[in-house]
Image 1 (cartoon, rainbow, N blue to C red):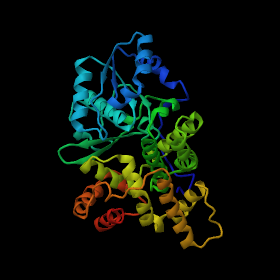
Image 2 (cartoon, helix red, strand yellow):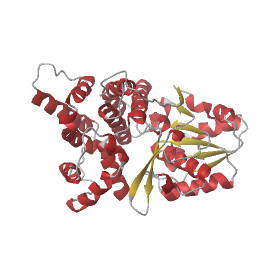
Image 3 (cartoon, rainbow, N blue to C red):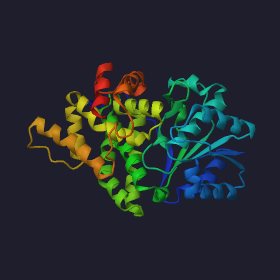
Image 4 (spheres, rainbow, N blue to C red):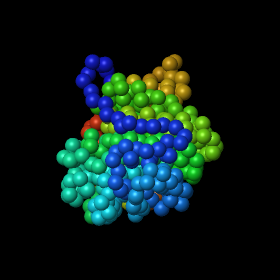
Length: 387
């Protein structure tokens, strides 16, 4: 948690439109950005859910031609980015519209990088390595979790190395995010739970990050408050637009926090799991969160206690050891309440995988802002506790 309001900090967010009907503004914004031809980046699940249709209708209403690129999987691959960039360039596109969860949005950012810089996507792994601005990017999120629609991150799987590449650059902040809570209505319960836990991890890791600030703290704590209240309700009552809207607002707040404060060990370890085994990112975060918090607790006790209070816990009269136990058990029971009950062992991870997983996690950029600096053996132990 930030110690001083006088520290010099940068805070970057895109323009965003929040509310039911925001999706219908895609054509207007594409026209505002001077679109001649639009590349829509999405995936088969979004098309099946029907959320491509209002985007296409909006572009048609503004007489804007488009091409649809839908060859995007969960944990988007480097070769999908390169294929999308080829489609973008071959069709003379000059604006990107991403429709979906984190995967299509991250893929669209990668496509923009390659199209603008004429290089392999792997050349940009790391921080501030994108030299030329990407084309105008309109993001339309259909999950409440990744917050890729407001962040300066993209995460792309390296298919050869079996790792995830984190690319961080101000140039990746979208030009506008059209955040429409109505798109969440079609999300299955388990996907709602996993993406929501991703958002909660964003908020918690941003709040204890070594790069946090008073601005990021405000958004992180509000996100914890909103998500802890409304995410379970969204899972139980998926068609309730009020619950969905507050969950989406929590995700947005978490996104603005982590995009500026960066993340921590939960995401470093989850990226390693996703890169090696193509596992769902939100589920991995949910499984790891308690174990990383237990490791970090001695370094950020006060901040974790504020998180506990934001989740509704009464900690005032408890000794420190009991406060810690209550916070950690609440995190675990919260994910179980959402229906996420698996361990890493349940999703196929074994002891023999741990060494390589820890090595990959140790070089993830997210680890740089974790409140404790873990050794390789400590990373292995966190994975081991989560089996």
